[in-house]
Length: 97
Image 1 (cartoon, rainbow, N blue to C red):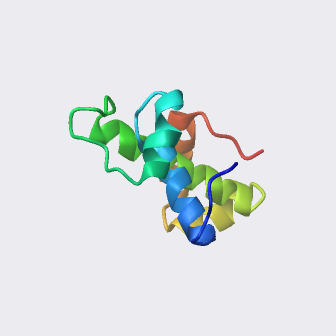
Image 2: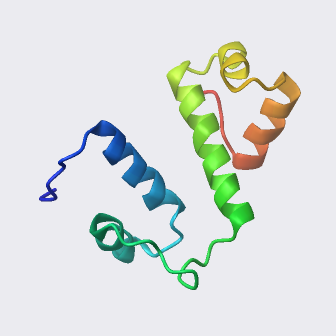
């Protein structure tokens, strides 16, 4: 809360995305991210596959929220067929609500 945000909303959004995908324990994430230090190679315990899955889940959930659960709009937004969307929603435990 006390961090000076000389940037703008995009800086905050970028930080929050790195926070989620960093793979660090929660108590270590914020100080490292705010310091601007790049995470060293050996520090992340989250594989690329897991990070991509987390990011994909986040994008789908964000689209569902943005379109108030309207699956047709989510399909159009993400440019994926209904079956693929249904499979991914089931995989990540997402629902329309």
